[in-house]
Length: 307
Image (cartoon, rainbow, N blue to C red; front, side, top):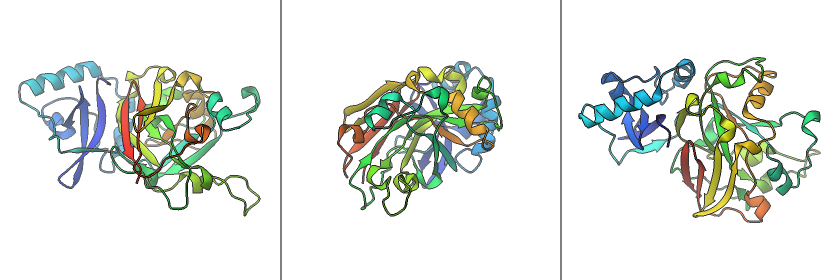
């Protein structure tokens, strides 16, 4: 469990920014009113870029902030939000850049033959805002697929504009990390009616195909993103388990590469690839009623049913 994380909660028909401390969810504005430091910006209500810019530049001691929250809670100056409140997606990124075949074992299980790294570069594709759902929300299984699949990934959330940045400087542009589940309809990922082998838009960009959350962990709490552990279970059975150390293209290399093509902006998200253990490699797929939990040990977990 991170020392401090930033999320969004829904209660009474409205969404509001939240601070998570020791597993308890606190209203961010209530903490600000109590004099506790929270970076400016209501990330639940269209100010995600502003908040992430502030978070990226923030050099706060999050342990001290957590101590202040605990002290205020013990004194009754702030209270956790009611248990009836539901965490939502932390914010709704407009662009999620996704790394394909970025773990050797995952490429092998998919039958993908990769060039040597020295002769290659990252392969990226996009997911968009309507793909994003939060904790507990259902992944909607299209009628046209019988091969719905999962992919747990570390998501790097950009907080500072990046254009032609170096690998060495790339991580300074990350405001936070979270979890994303790159849901894919494998049988809709291919086409035979055009002379192009793959249709990644059709296979990966349906509404609800990017569970995202459960919250944002400041990048300073994860000094080396390559050390995090990834896991995904379906109906309680572990399907994927690995570490980000197994990536071909590290997080900083992906950021640097993308910045040679376009300007990365605060609020952009990079889904950095998935380890082995997806359904396609196992010959099993999701069905309605299944429940997925995508987790990163140093961040948290997001659970979503299939509907």
